[in-house]
Structures are given as C-alpha cells and as structure tokens.
Image (cartoon, rainbow, N blue to C red):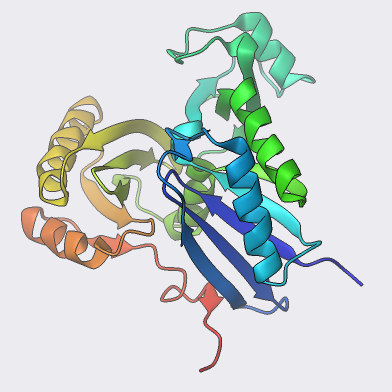
Length: 282
C-alpha cells in the first residue's frame, strides 16, 4: 500500500543503497548494497556521465526489487558547501533565501550565490554560550543539483529529496553532544582514499571545516595542527573529543593511531554499535 523508502548515498567512486523495515527502535536494517561506479562517472561531486549513472542506479534498483520506491539521496560531500551565518535580524526572516540573496554576504564560495541552490536551517546552541541568531547554509551550484535530479529521472525513481552529506553527519553527531561540558571541542573526521574532511563543533554548532590531504598516516599530524590553531582562537576549548565517520575500512586503524598520537578520546560513529540500527538476524 505504501511505497518503500530507499536511502542512496552517492560518492565519486561508489553508490550505496540502504533500506529499513518496521518503525521500532533500533531501526531494523533490511538491505545494504554498495556498488562501485565506473571511473570518471562522478568527479568532485559532479555527475560526469549523467545517462550512464541514471541507467546504473535504475538497473540496481530493479535488481534489488526496489522499483517504485521513494528515494532520499545523499549527495557527495564535494558537491556541497556549508557556512554558518549570523543574521543581522532579531528573528527568522519570512523568506530567508531571498533575504540572504539580497544581503549577498562575502561567503568565499567558488560560485556566485545567485547561481546556487541554497538550504537554510536555523541553528540553536546548547545554551552554554550566546551565539546570536544564526543558521546553517548548505549550498551547491544550481546546475549540479539539476544534473543529479536528471540522473534520478533517467533512473526512473521518485526522488523525495536530496541531502548534503555534511548535514547528515552533523545530524548523526547531534545526539552524542547532549550534556557535553562547556569546555568541549568535538572534531568530526571523515576519511577517504587520500585525505579527510574535518569539522569542528563547539557548543553544538559547527564552527570550522577543512579538507585534509595525504595518507592515513598523515592525518594525525594535520589534525593536531588544526586543533592547536582553533584552540589558540578559543582558549576555553580545553577538552577535545574525536569522532570518526564514513565508510572507510581503515577507521579502526585510524582510531588506534589517533589515540596514540594525542591525549583525547576517539570514537567511531558506528550506527550498529551505537544501537541506532539493528542488523538482520543471521
């Protein structure tokens, strides 16, 4: 009676399909399939071979028996950019997107705001520090978003919405920050083949993001330098906690290396071990 919902995570080199069943807690995982993409099909978050990607995703969903499902797609992190904005208003604007375009602040984006698709989400600090009226801006070039929509049109699926990988990661981290001490700085590290994305979260709000380049062995030194830089700007951040996320099979090894290189706890954001998702019975 009701169509199934499918989550599809897109990356430059792979696509991951996930479905769940039931509405209990923890959520019961029903299906998980990760498929490699042809070389060059997607690069830097841009679909380079729109027709081929659409056909591949459509064929994959047919193979998995998911024809007619509603799809929530998570765009590659490289496809999107995020900024934290502090508004010069006392309340949320009636038309926040139009207000932002009118103000047109200097955001250091690699494209004009007028040529971008934007999503604005109100942000609330954890109450330990007044931050003013702020919101999270997630943006991507409009043509890039249209290209991804075309991919799913070719795949013949009902696209419910597109999400940014960064927003999904922050959403997963949020419940783990409840009750954090006011001196805590949380570092979210998402490694990939030749580097990682670093996001620093303070008082429940993302405050700093940086791309790290290099091998897994190089990440510890780079992380330490960025943490030292940020703590020099915010001396009150005396307690550091590291969170690792993503699909890299090297997460356990990286966690051990980071525990040895610094005096900080390191945790892996694993939805199964955290009790958020239950694996199917064997």
